[in-house]
Image 1 (tube, rainbow, N blue to C red):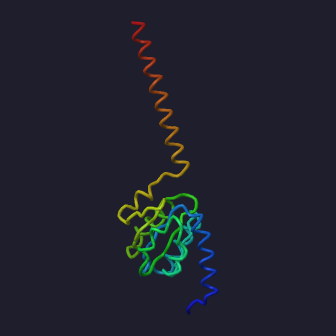
Image 2 (image 1 turned 90 degrees about the vertical axis):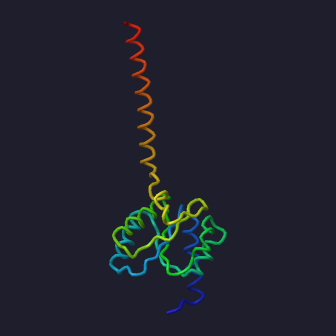
Length: 163
């Protein structure tokens, strides 16, 4: 059943707010995926702070107009499933990548982060971005390693002086 103009305006208004808050966007083709799998994807998306939805391409072009995701406008053709990462830039890419492993018909088309397009073959760049906690633990491990390394060097110098 086609949407009337009021319903279209409501969809554009709702998704425009989400579009402004989003850190990254991933677009995929979900043709041939059964309803149970999509339901599972939606459940996982809620747990990972990812908004997913099916939107008409014409409406999506209106939504991304004058936003950081405007670079996607030429990529919107055919059936698409869009995923907005709301808390971490790599969460939608990670979610879609894991889902594509289990569902061979699910194809990631393209993504956008910081106003730049990321091709489907390069989606790992976005999917492997560390979370805040992971980045913090990497930094602390590096600082700890550097401090221990200096301490060991000092002990070696003291040992050499005593000889």
